[in-house]
Figure 1 (cartoon, rainbow, N blue to C red):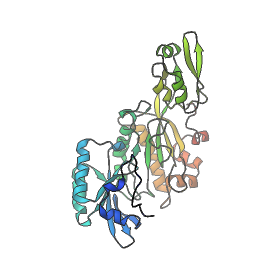
Figure 2: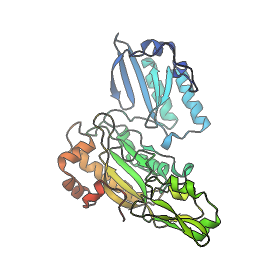
Figure 3: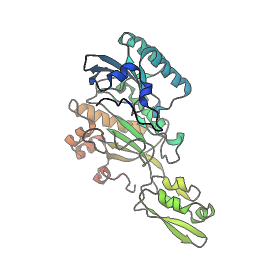
Figure 4: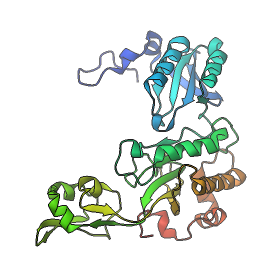
Length: 345
C-alpha cells in the first residue's frame, strides 16, 4: 500500500520529512532484497531500480556520543540518501551509490566500526541499558554485549552459520532487552528474593499504594505493624523483577547473588515463539564473562555442527529434541526450566 499523501496532524514528526524525493517516489514499489555480502543489502524495485544499504554494527544498546552521531551524519551526506537505526540497534546507510561502496566500506573500517549482521550471520547483539540509567538490572547488559561481540565478531562477517543468529540481552527479568525473543537470550536474574525491613520502610514514609501497584504479579500486599504500614511479599508469586526495590529502595533489599540465565529458541516474525531456559543460573563476572562466553560458544558449536542449512536455532533444537540438546551442551536437565525462568535456585 502506498504511503498517504498527507499524514494527520499530531505531535509526532512526519517521518517523510526525513526522506529524499527518490525514496518518497519509490515507496511501496520495492519487491525484493538480498544480501550481497555481510552488511550490504541490495533492494530491487518493480521497475528494476537498484538500491544499496550498508549496515553498521553500533556500540551495545546503540549508545552514541555526539562525535559518533556526527560521523554517521557525514557518511549519509557523502554516500547515502538517508540513515536509519534498526530495531536491533544497528545503523543502516540507505541508498548508497554502488560506485562509492568500496570507499564507504574503507572509511567505516578506518573509523573502527564493523560492517555486517545481515543474512546468515550473527546480527547486532541487542541489549537494554542496564546500569547506564536503570536501577533494576541484575547484570550490565551493554558490557556483556561488548564482551560477547568481541568474542563472536567473526560471525558478524561470515556466512558460515546455518541461518541468521540473533542474540538479545535483558539486564533483569523485566525483559526490556528482548531476551525471551531471540535465538539466544540472556537475562539477568537474582538468586535471592526481596526482603522487607518493616522499620526502615515505615520510617521512609514510602507510598505504599504505589509500591503495591508496581508489582507486576500482585505479590505485594499492605501489612499493619506496631509502627505503621509496611508490606508483605508472597514469594510464591514473586518473579524477582526488582520493581519493588525501585519503588521503595529504603525498605526493600534483594539479597543473594546476581547471575545470568541463558535461553534458546526464541524468534519473532511468522510463527513467533519464546525461548526456553537452558542454563538457569550462571555467575556474572565482568569484564571477561568467561563462563557465559563458554556456554554460548558450546551452543553455537552444536548448532553449527548438526543443523541443516537454513535451520534457525529453535527449529534445530525442536528437531534434535530438548533432552538430547541439553545433554550436548551440558544444560539443565530439569524440564521445568524450559517454561519457568523464575523457579527458586
